Length: 293
Image 1 (cartoon, rainbow, N blue to C red):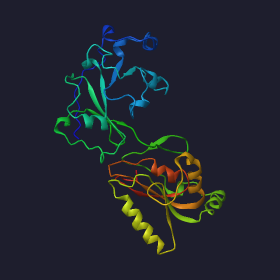
Image 2: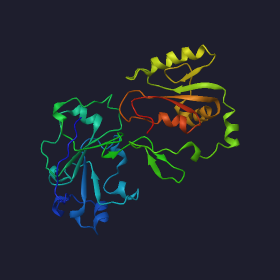
Image 3: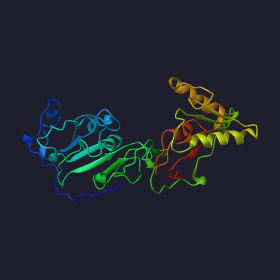
Image 4: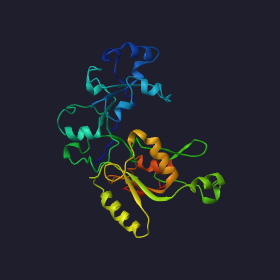
């Protein structure tokens, strides 16, 4: 996908008061604001799907999170302003817009507008292979570390709760700077008795992880070690309704966990990595990301 930037004027918020379909909640939020300074964001695709479902309506998503800027109004209503070219941003959910292609997309746009491609799904499953969408989007809102706005599965924080990653270039602590492993943690690790586990339900993926796991399981047996596969793709079960129990089992019993992604895409690292890291298990990673980040 090619991403372009359209040059805009100094003031994008040129919707006049007569352009706005007022609501009681919005008027309460904006009564002390100059409406010309507001930015209007239109959700072109369904507001009920990820990531739009987390944005809230009106200014709610910004005020509830105590964002430094709250002068934005989010709406799925294409008639909220008198003309769709008056919206500052129009956001499209990636998987949905790929299915739409040329159908039901805006037929007019202004130079001041930013069109945003928003997705948390792997591009391996949802590639944009259409000349009609080449140069269509100005910004991306995805898990990619070079997105204009990043929507990832996790943050990396230091001991002071400062967010330090993921980044294109990470600066990790040197071993000599780290706290020593205490005896209590060492005792906890001594409860472990099994080699590796994997929780998986999608057996037919694009990455080929199932074939790799089966090969690994076969090789481990040569050393009297076992890879326990839980879920639809294995012989063991640990219900998703009992996730706390499953995670405690990882913490207590296993040394390694297979953090295998179902597809390859740059920077695509999901919560599968956290299953290991949050439960004192060494992750075995398999995906298209640079895991040093």
